[in-house]
Length: 189
Image (cartoon, rainbow, N blue to C red; front, side, top):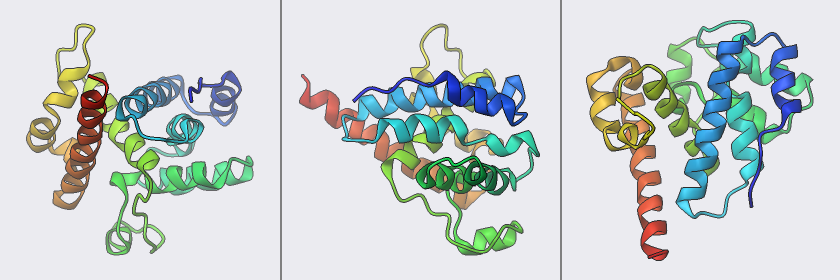
């Protein structure tokens, strides 16, 4: 199933005060998430992939600090966004925190682990878009270098891996999703 990003959703981001740069980032993450989701060949909720990615940084209308996920999810609930979308907004910080990590960071103590493939694809796409946008790879129309060099980049640039726990979470998502893409390509040959 295909899904297109809705102008009404980008309108919500604007009306809530999300900056144009952050909206551009959210749209790129949604587009990249949909692209990756299609390439996995998995049976996924494409609307959840698109909307979860598009709204993941809604909280940046209020702050760019670590609590933007929590604030975004609260705002999303008030706006009537579906619970699976607001869950992505809340859990996307550092790729899905454990209770212990949340406590260390001063967030509400609970498990933020990413449970669905849709959630993991969005987090993976978010990291890839950051790498591409920051110019870490020379893409010249081909963004695949970010995927090929993902592990190397996360290890070389601490800003993307954050810390050891987060780094290994991201590497796990990368390996899982790349494995699904390889399997899908092999089945279509």
